Length: 126
Image: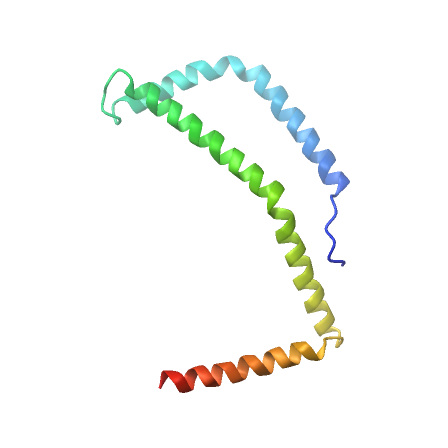
């Protein structure tokens, strides 16, 4: 595997398909949302102080947190997930090279340095 991560067109097509389904189902079921939010507000009113605005505040806070969570997940997946995959591919390529016997001498030096560092650390502890 190469270290370059490229977009998978089949995953893009599946993502587009799922987005269309979610939007379609949401548009069909949009009539059920206001009664559900009203019920959520009624349920949250008593635990939040039983004031007239407590339920509205609780429902608004729940919706805000849900939207913020989805937005945060979307931004993370767009900005950082590709970098995570690149690091994982690079680590897998390094593991493949060392398993094939093609590992560089830098890997052996790293192992020796780690051992020497460990011995040094144990000397300083005692």
